[in-house]
Image 1 (tube, rainbow, N blue to C red):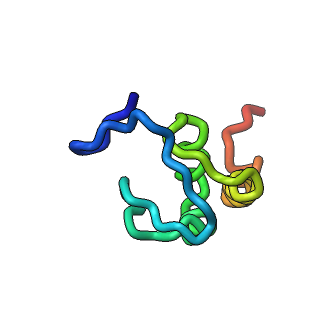
Image 2 (cartoon, rainbow, N blue to C red):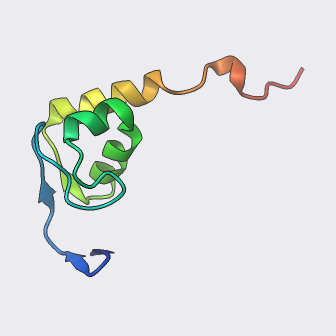
Length: 79
């Protein structure tokens, strides 16, 4: 069970694409906005069992998160 503020999260929160989040750093922002602007947050919510989202929304968040990752050349590569 997760606790956010005074809310005990015993039930999985269910969101659709146009729904606004009602907790966390993206409170009052739509799921669509978060998918485009902070896709790793969507992935975190689903993977930690905090929220349930349609599969296509989660897939889009994964895709956006991968596209926002630094290129391979960014990481240290010893000679």
